[in-house]
Length: 400
Image (cartoon, helix red, strand yellow):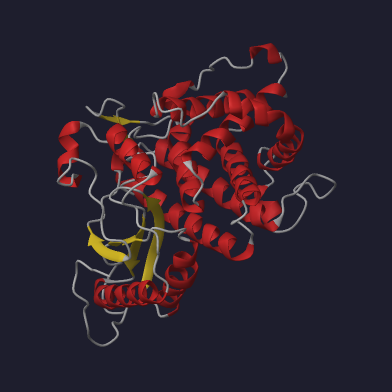
C-alpha cells in the first residue's frame, strides 16, 4: 500500500475556536474491486464518527476510472482547526481497511484496461494526455490498494459557478448517504435490484425537475442520445438490444413511472416523505426510500430555481470558450439535472451503458403514454445539448 502524504499526528482537534468550515480534503482511494465494502466498512463509519465528534461540515464521494478504478472521497472539516485531525483519521481509516481487505484484482491487462484506455482516448485530447501516460503511451495506472491526497477541483462550469457548486456539494452529501444506506439495506449486488433502484431514483429526480410529460420524454431521449454519441464507433451504447429488452419490462416500468409522477408532479413529495397521502385520500404515495428522495429533490429544484432567478448561476459554454449566465429556471434545471442524475448513478456503481439503457426505456415508456404516439422518436425542444450531462467529456464526474 502506498500514500502520497505523510500521516499527521497530534491530539484531537476541536471544531470550536475557528469561524467557518475548513478547506475541502480530497483522497483518491485506488481499489480495483466493487467499492461497496470500502464504502460500508470504511468511508461511511468514518464520516459518521467525524460528524458525531463535531469535526465534519460536509462530505461526498464519486467513483472514477482515470489511472485505474478508484473512489474519490471529499471531506470538509468543520473548521480549519479540525483539518489536521480529519486528515489523520481519514488516512488511518483508509490504511486499516486496505490492509485488512485489499482488492485482489489488478487492472493491468485484458478487457477492463482496454475499456479504460478507450475512455481515456475519447475524453482526453492529445495535449491533455501527457500527465497520465506511461512509458508505452497508454494510460498510467496507480498502484492498487493505495491512497493519494489530491487537490479538490470543483467543476464550476458544469454546476453553475460558485453558488451552483455550493448547492451541488449540499446535494452530493445527501446522494452519498442515500446510496450508502441503500448498499446497506438493499440487495444491490443483484443486477435487477440495482437497475430497478436506479430507474426509480431517476424517475423521481427527473419528474421533480421536469414536470411536463412531453418535456421529460424529450429530455430522456436526448439524454440517451448524448451517451450514444459519446462513444462513437465502440458499440458500447446499444440501440437494437435496448428495444428488444423493452417489451418485457415496459408494462411494470410504465406503471411505476405513472405512480411516481402522480406524486412528484402533484406537489405531494413533502407529504409523501412524512408518510401521509399527499391529498389525504387515495392518492398514490411513495415508499419511504423514494419519498425522502422526492422531498430532497423538490428542495434541490427550488434552490436551483432561486439561484437562477437571482442571477447566481454561470455555466461554461459548450465550446468551452466563455461563461454564460443563466437566469431562466426552465433553462437551468435541465442543465443541472443531467450531472445530478448521472452522479447518483455513478455512486450506485451503475455503468454508463446501463444508465443509457434506463434513460432510453424510461423515455420510451413516457412517450408511448402521450397522445399522438406517432411522434415517438422525434427530438423535442429540450435538445441534445440541454439534456446531455454538462461537460461532455466527463462520463464519470472527474472533478466535483
